[in-house]
Length: 114
Image (spheres, rainbow, N blue to C red):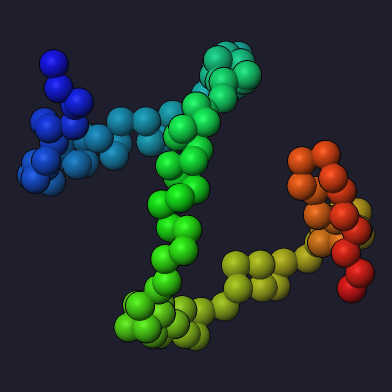
């Protein structure tokens, strides 16, 4: 018995295999029934607490290197926001406004003043 994961280390995948994997489900339309089945199969499932803690602690307390921050900044330079030019309905704007005014932490709701 092993912990698993040994089989794919430094595995080289050919371009043909990449295309096959990428095109496998591309363009397929799911029926409403299959969407509901998929949704129902995952409802109520929760991650183990140990997994949540492991994910949370992975980057906690770690700082970005200055070179990395500079590279990210240069890469983003000149790009516009994803929502630039989008027109939102009055209802959507109200919802966004409300969500920015409320912080939910478990059972405790805090209204932020802006």
